[in-house]
Structure formats: structure tokens, C-alpha cells
Length: 156
Image (cartoon, rainbow, N blue to C red; front, side):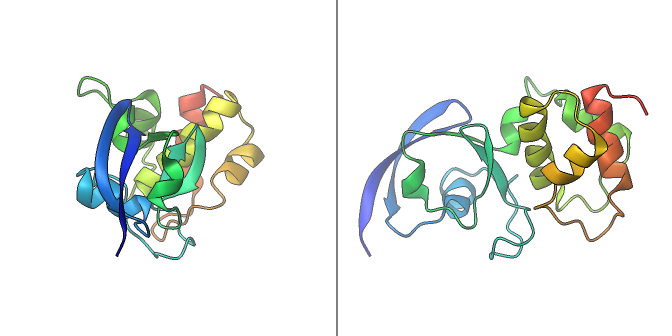
């Protein structure tokens, strides 16, 4: 197995690690960097639980080779919390019951974060489209959409 010294910028921290050429971003985040907020779900790019932001775009960490992220900006769910305080989006998910078991929540929140950066006040259709790659087995998505809408300050 070939390894390379990989420089990654994760959550505004630049770090170097010896990483296997075939290492997935998900494994590097969880096992090497200890950022376990990014969830391992289906391992096939179907559920969205491992969604992170790479240069502000949602990306599935279970399908992304870590080596392809050199020189790019990676953000995980841990990055949204500042000084021990939840972001407005995380707070909205909490207050509007956008979580049930919570397993899909980090991926949902990161996909919603990417959407809100692009479209600060999205319509419900835009919210659904922005979250289309993320599955939740516990909810009917109503509370999730309400959570994103609340974070955007969009009244209905």
C-alpha cells in the first residue's frame, strides 16, 4: 500500500498526515483526525450521512479520495460550532425538531449549510432540492424543512 504525505485544510486547520493513496476522506476525518461528527452510513454514496463541504460545496466523504482534497478547504459539522455554541442552523434543527435519532443530522446540516450559503432565503422547493442527496429514516422531512426555513429566517 502506497502512502503519501498529504496536507489537508480541515476546519481552518492545516495538517499533514501520511495517508494511503486509496484512503477515503471519511476515514481520514474519522480515524486520523478524530472528527467523528461526519457519520459513516451506507458507504455507497446513497444516504448523505457523510456530507462535508469541500470548497463550500457538499461532497460525500465516503466516495471522495482524501488525496483529491489537497489544497482544498474541507469543513465538517464540528466547524459550525463556535466557542461551544451551536450555529444558527444547528440551533434551528434543535428548536424545530429537525432531528430524531440524529444519525443523518450532520449530513443534513452540512447540505443545508451549503444551500444557505448559495441561497440565503431558499424556497421550500430549493430546500428539498438542496437536501435531495440526504436520507432520513426517522422523519417525514417536514421538520427538517421547517428547521432550514427557520435558520434562513423565512416565514411561511
